Image (cartoon, rainbow, N blue to C red; front, side, top):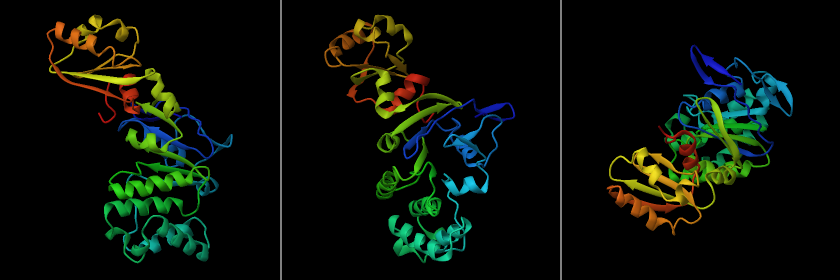
Length: 304
């Protein structure tokens, strides 16, 4: 799909295939094109090029039939000012065509599942931010959609709410297809079966979490932070174990490498730093993350 706003191409010929029943992490920095893509898939925006298919059939995401299949919990919380939590869910159910008894039943089920049962008769707008976020997600689930879009579902949640929402998303696996948009790589690692990373509206990588992290090579990540600017002139003087790996990144004051011999090459690294007259600020050895892959692909941090 492609979407342009004047001279800006927000989504640039982006193609994705999401499998039925999986939790799919749709990742990228702010402004990468995630929300625009989701809006096109939900029928809230018309693409300038491309189509949306479900089960191999081209559909109009904005049609009534498609809307019954789709649930959306947007990043911006949308609640009715004058309705209680129970009324919010029941009213949304009626909008989706549920009869009154089923809407009431779904209201009871969702209020209990999201830990809001004791708030059932309180106005939704009077809840804390974390509880409003939970209610916002519950509204997207009222009609039991086959395809659920969650746009930054953990935004503004306290630790307890984050755990509750994470468990609920996991419980949907196999029963619904979940597309999760976020710039929180750590949360995506915990939730997703597969992940794609986009930037500037283009697909950078799509794979399992393990598969994406292995693109940096086998082993742990060594991070060397220098007191001052590293500069590219340091790279030719690195030990062969570094330069031959082709997994060296210079990012600000930090130089990083993935190696399965990370401990054995540390003395060489320190020797090179000292010989170039540089001062070591910190040295870390840790496991790779999805954000490390993003920095390797783009040369910048996820939140920049």
